[in-house]
Amino acid sequence: MSDWQNQLYFGDCLDVLKTLFEKHPDGFIDLIYIDPPFNSKRNYNILFEDIKFDDTQAQKQAFADTWSNVSYKDTLEQIKDIDLDLFYLLDNFDKIRISKSAVAYLTTMAIRIWYMHKVLKQTGR
Image 1 (cartoon, one colour):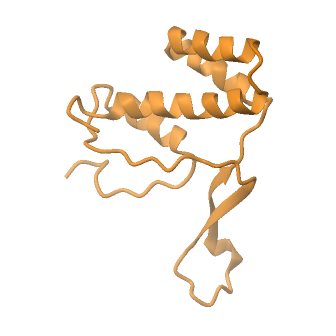
Image 2: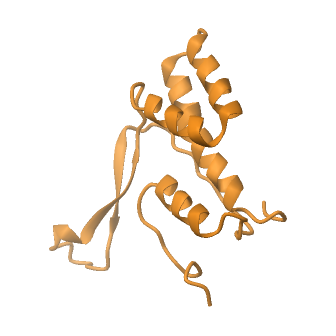
C-alpha cells in the first residue's frame, strides 16, 4: 500500500494538493469531490474522540471558510508562477468592473482546481 492511501488530511486542501503534486506530478487520483467554500466567515473545527469535551485541546481547526479581498493578490502571484493563461484571465477580471469579492472567490477556487486537475489520473474525474 502506498503512503498516500488511507490518509486523512486536515487543513487547507491547497497545502495538501501542492504536496501531493510534488510527490506525484503525473497524477494518481481517480476521483475528487469538491465542496466549495461559501464565505460563511466561520472557522470550522474537528472534534476528536473525547466525548466528554473536557479537553479543549482536542479540537483542531479544519478550515476557515473565508476569503479576503486583499489576500487573493498573493494567490494571483502564485498562479502567475504555475499558469500564465489562468493568471491573465483572473488579472483581467480584477481590472474590469467585477466585484473584488467575486475575483477573490474565483482566484481562491482557481488555484485549487488547477492542482486538483494536476493530481488526477488521465482517466480521473
